[in-house]
View 1 (tube, rainbow, N blue to C red):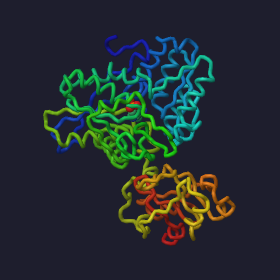
View 2 (view 1 turned 90 degrees about the horizontal axis):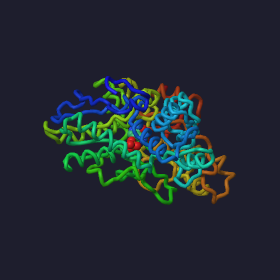
View 3 (view 1 turned 90 degrees about the vertical axis):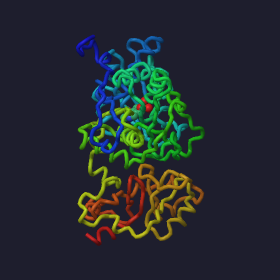
View 4 (view 1 turned 120 degrees about the horizontal axis):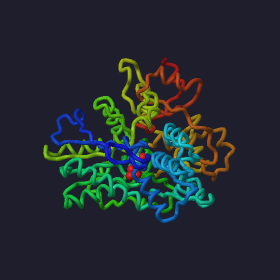
Length: 455
Ligand code: PMP
């Protein structure tokens, strides 16, 4: 219908604006546009895939009146499915990992969804792995249909049919580079395929990936930008990539560390007036890297999948950023935690370590953090801390047991750039070692007494 009038919320999905970046692109000759997918009526790029998957299921008779939509999702797909389900009279059941932001969980509940929160960071084969929980629920609930965005061909097809043609039309065929974060891969695959076809192969497609993600060659350890990248638990027997992602469509994959994504997304808000989510920071960081080498004839389009309103308690919260060591020192004149760190050695224990070996590693220490077992190099990520071990608990443990069976609660985490006073206040009356975080990783252990003695 014309004049922006629609018969339903689903009909209002798509046709999102392109907005040019003007300040972050200083010194760059090429034009960089951001496609504001967060202006979709349900708040994200996933509106498109959710609608396409529901329509395909209805057409195939897999989703019938009175049916239940079931999905495993970090949030946005669930939110879009929930809203469309509500408007069409379906029930919705959504399984989310516990690392999803509080805002996304609250949104799901607002649409009347039954939300199941399951621990994140589980191997693929684990019964608590998000997709396994969702598939089990779908099998149990009569009339349930499992959306399965990771492998559902309607997901990339939605972008091929809508996102790609919109970008081509909006740039009058001038787009030369397309940049998108890769989660299920639906956006980059469907949009990329269309733009390549319509341009006779001229458009370059760039995937933006968290540095640790397996897609770009990382070891799959955890990271902090939600909804993109491919995590790999070391106990996963067979790693499978989603069918929605066709890597051959990507000409270049930019690996972006979390701190760069966070810096860019905060600059977008403060210098462009664009409040976007973390994965937009990753996509724009990649777009700026690419654009730096281009000419004024080039037009780069990056996707802004969702809004920063989903992450006010994370990426836009100074306390969150500071605690994980992502923020620069807020009050540069005051001494910070990093000033107290005297050794570069990071002592952590992998979860598969035997109790006997852990007793040796513990030595004189009163506690050490236990993290997901990773044999590669690189600093352990705070998000992969499972707990801690203490001599008292280990003394009673059979020597062959893995330490993961004898965990105490995690040690407090303080940020390397926090003022010493703020960090001391954060840990309260905790005694013994605390974890010092820098850029989301464990950079050192510090004794609480050292922290308190200097305040
Ligand atoms: N960013 C956000 C915030 C998302 O919710 C998603 C969807 N998982 C993506 C990026 C990645 O999109 P896609 O699944 O199409 O690769």
